[in-house]
Image (cartoon, rainbow, N blue to C red):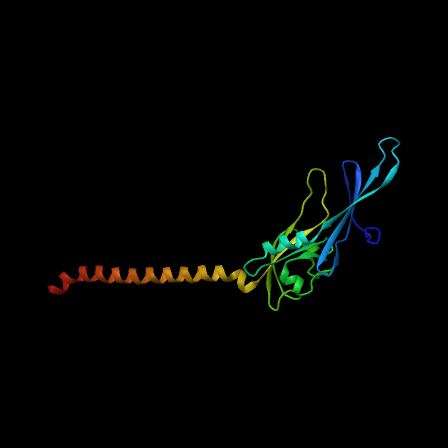
Length: 193
Protein backbone atom coordinates (compact mmCIF):
# COMPACT_ATOMS: atom_id res chain seq x y z
CA UNK A 1 0.00 0.00 0.00
CA UNK A 2 2.91 2.40 0.70
CA UNK A 3 4.40 2.00 -2.78
CA UNK A 4 1.15 3.24 -4.34
CA UNK A 5 1.19 6.44 -2.29
CA UNK A 6 3.55 9.20 -3.38
CA UNK A 7 5.98 10.70 -0.87
CA UNK A 8 4.35 13.61 0.94
CA UNK A 9 7.06 14.65 3.41
CA UNK A 10 10.70 13.75 3.92
CA UNK A 11 12.76 14.25 7.06
CA UNK A 12 16.22 13.21 8.15
CA UNK A 13 16.26 11.76 11.65
CA UNK A 14 19.34 10.16 13.22
CA UNK A 15 21.05 10.09 9.83
CA UNK A 16 18.24 8.18 8.08
CA UNK A 17 15.76 9.63 5.64
CA UNK A 18 12.22 9.00 6.83
CA UNK A 19 9.38 9.49 4.35
CA UNK A 20 5.70 10.00 4.99
CA UNK A 21 2.93 9.36 2.49
CA UNK A 22 -0.16 11.54 2.60
CA UNK A 23 -2.80 10.05 4.93
CA UNK A 24 -5.11 7.71 3.01
CA UNK A 25 -8.78 7.30 3.89
CA UNK A 26 -10.67 4.15 3.04
CA UNK A 27 -14.30 4.32 4.24
CA UNK A 28 -14.07 4.94 8.01
CA UNK A 29 -10.36 4.12 8.39
CA UNK A 30 -7.36 6.31 7.68
CA UNK A 31 -3.66 5.48 7.76
CA UNK A 32 -0.39 7.34 7.39
CA UNK A 33 2.50 5.31 5.97
CA UNK A 34 5.90 6.10 7.50
CA UNK A 35 8.89 4.54 5.78
CA UNK A 36 12.56 4.31 6.74
CA UNK A 37 15.42 2.48 5.01
CA UNK A 38 16.93 -0.58 6.65
CA UNK A 39 20.66 -0.91 5.99
CA UNK A 40 22.86 -3.92 6.57
CA UNK A 41 25.08 -3.63 9.62
CA UNK A 42 27.83 -5.54 7.80
CA UNK A 43 28.08 -4.16 4.28
CA UNK A 44 26.01 -0.98 4.53
CA UNK A 45 23.82 -2.21 1.68
CA UNK A 46 20.16 -1.31 1.67
CA UNK A 47 18.18 -4.35 2.76
CA UNK A 48 14.76 -2.80 2.27
CA UNK A 49 12.25 -0.41 3.78
CA UNK A 50 10.61 -0.56 7.17
CA UNK A 51 7.03 0.68 6.73
CA UNK A 52 4.83 1.63 9.65
CA UNK A 53 1.12 2.15 9.08
CA UNK A 54 0.05 4.76 11.64
CA UNK A 55 -3.66 4.76 12.49
CA UNK A 56 -4.59 8.29 11.40
CA UNK A 57 -7.96 7.79 13.11
CA UNK A 58 -6.14 8.54 16.37
CA UNK A 59 -5.59 12.09 15.09
CA UNK A 60 -9.31 12.36 14.26
CA UNK A 61 -10.13 11.15 17.80
CA UNK A 62 -7.83 13.77 19.34
CA UNK A 63 -9.49 16.49 17.29
CA UNK A 64 -12.96 15.18 18.26
CA UNK A 65 -12.04 15.50 21.95
CA UNK A 66 -10.74 19.04 21.40
CA UNK A 67 -13.88 20.11 19.51
CA UNK A 68 -16.26 20.94 22.35
CA UNK A 69 -18.70 23.76 22.91
CA UNK A 70 -19.43 24.38 19.22
CA UNK A 71 -15.76 24.43 18.22
CA UNK A 72 -14.46 22.66 15.13
CA UNK A 73 -10.81 21.66 14.81
CA UNK A 74 -8.80 20.88 11.67
CA UNK A 75 -5.23 19.94 10.87
CA UNK A 76 -4.04 21.36 7.54
CA UNK A 77 -0.81 21.06 5.58
CA UNK A 78 1.39 23.90 4.32
CA UNK A 79 -0.90 24.36 1.29
CA UNK A 80 -4.04 24.69 3.42
CA UNK A 81 -5.38 21.21 2.55
CA UNK A 82 -7.34 19.48 5.31
CA UNK A 83 -5.57 16.34 6.57
CA UNK A 84 -7.66 15.63 9.66
CA UNK A 85 -10.73 17.23 11.17
CA UNK A 86 -13.18 16.96 14.01
CA UNK A 87 -16.44 15.09 13.48
CA UNK A 88 -18.58 18.04 12.36
CA UNK A 89 -16.07 18.95 9.65
CA UNK A 90 -15.68 15.32 8.55
CA UNK A 91 -19.45 15.01 8.29
CA UNK A 92 -19.47 18.15 6.13
CA UNK A 93 -17.05 16.40 3.76
CA UNK A 94 -13.96 18.51 4.49
CA UNK A 95 -11.32 15.83 4.11
CA UNK A 96 -9.20 14.04 1.54
CA UNK A 97 -6.90 16.97 0.92
CA UNK A 98 -9.63 19.52 0.20
CA UNK A 99 -8.21 23.04 0.47
CA UNK A 100 -10.10 25.61 2.53
CA UNK A 101 -8.83 28.49 0.39
CA UNK A 102 -8.33 30.76 3.41
CA UNK A 103 -4.86 32.11 2.47
CA UNK A 104 -3.32 30.59 5.59
CA UNK A 105 0.23 31.02 4.27
CA UNK A 106 -0.06 34.77 4.93
CA UNK A 107 -0.75 34.25 8.64
CA UNK A 108 1.79 33.17 11.21
CA UNK A 109 -0.44 32.47 14.22
CA UNK A 110 -3.17 34.04 16.32
CA UNK A 111 -6.84 34.47 15.50
CA UNK A 112 -8.82 36.08 12.71
CA UNK A 113 -12.42 36.45 11.59
CA UNK A 114 -13.45 34.86 8.33
CA UNK A 115 -16.55 34.19 6.27
CA UNK A 116 -17.64 30.73 7.35
CA UNK A 117 -17.75 29.03 3.95
CA UNK A 118 -17.14 26.08 3.50
CA UNK A 119 -17.30 25.26 7.21
CA UNK A 120 -20.25 27.27 8.51
CA UNK A 121 -23.16 29.33 7.20
CA UNK A 122 -22.14 32.53 8.98
CA UNK A 123 -18.89 34.23 10.01
CA UNK A 124 -16.40 32.28 12.09
CA UNK A 125 -13.44 33.11 14.31
CA UNK A 126 -10.39 31.01 13.49
CA UNK A 127 -7.50 30.37 15.86
CA UNK A 128 -4.36 29.30 14.05
CA UNK A 129 -1.28 27.60 15.47
CA UNK A 130 1.67 26.34 13.46
CA UNK A 131 3.65 23.28 14.52
CA UNK A 132 7.30 24.05 15.06
CA UNK A 133 10.27 21.77 14.85
CA UNK A 134 11.76 19.90 17.76
CA UNK A 135 15.20 18.44 18.57
CA UNK A 136 16.71 19.16 15.16
CA UNK A 137 13.57 18.14 13.26
CA UNK A 138 12.28 21.09 11.25
CA UNK A 139 8.67 19.87 11.25
CA UNK A 140 6.40 19.15 8.32
CA UNK A 141 4.47 22.39 8.05
CA UNK A 142 1.27 21.38 9.82
CA UNK A 143 -1.16 23.98 11.12
CA UNK A 144 -3.97 23.47 13.60
CA UNK A 145 -7.14 25.50 13.13
CA UNK A 146 -9.73 25.98 15.86
CA UNK A 147 -12.90 27.26 14.23
CA UNK A 148 -15.87 28.64 16.13
CA UNK A 149 -18.99 30.46 14.93
CA UNK A 150 -18.53 34.16 15.62
CA UNK A 151 -21.77 34.30 17.62
CA UNK A 152 -20.44 31.59 19.97
CA UNK A 153 -16.98 33.17 20.15
CA UNK A 154 -18.27 36.60 21.22
CA UNK A 155 -21.00 35.25 23.52
CA UNK A 156 -18.77 35.49 26.66
CA UNK A 157 -17.86 39.07 25.73
CA UNK A 158 -21.54 39.96 25.27
CA UNK A 159 -22.38 38.28 28.59
CA UNK A 160 -19.57 40.21 30.29
CA UNK A 161 -20.83 43.47 28.75
CA UNK A 162 -24.36 42.77 30.05
CA UNK A 163 -23.00 42.06 33.55
CA UNK A 164 -20.91 45.26 33.43
CA UNK A 165 -23.94 47.32 32.36
CA UNK A 166 -26.06 45.76 35.12
CA UNK A 167 -23.40 46.57 37.74
CA UNK A 168 -23.01 50.10 36.35
CA UNK A 169 -26.79 50.60 36.40
CA UNK A 170 -26.95 49.33 39.98
CA UNK A 171 -24.17 51.70 41.02
CA UNK A 172 -25.93 54.64 39.34
CA UNK A 173 -29.19 53.85 41.17
CA UNK A 174 -27.39 53.47 44.52
CA UNK A 175 -25.44 56.70 43.90
CA UNK A 176 -28.63 58.64 43.10
CA UNK A 177 -30.36 57.17 46.15
CA UNK A 178 -27.48 58.07 48.47
CA UNK A 179 -27.14 61.54 46.87
CA UNK A 180 -30.86 62.20 47.33
CA UNK A 181 -30.75 61.12 50.97
CA UNK A 182 -27.60 63.22 51.68
CA UNK A 183 -29.03 66.29 49.92
CA UNK A 184 -32.34 65.98 51.80
CA UNK A 185 -30.47 65.70 55.12
CA UNK A 186 -28.43 68.80 54.25
CA UNK A 187 -31.44 70.74 52.99
CA UNK A 188 -33.83 69.85 55.87
CA UNK A 189 -32.44 72.38 58.40
CA UNK A 190 -32.59 75.10 55.74
CA UNK A 191 -36.19 74.24 54.86
CA UNK A 192 -37.21 74.28 58.55
CA UNK A 193 -35.99 77.87 58.92
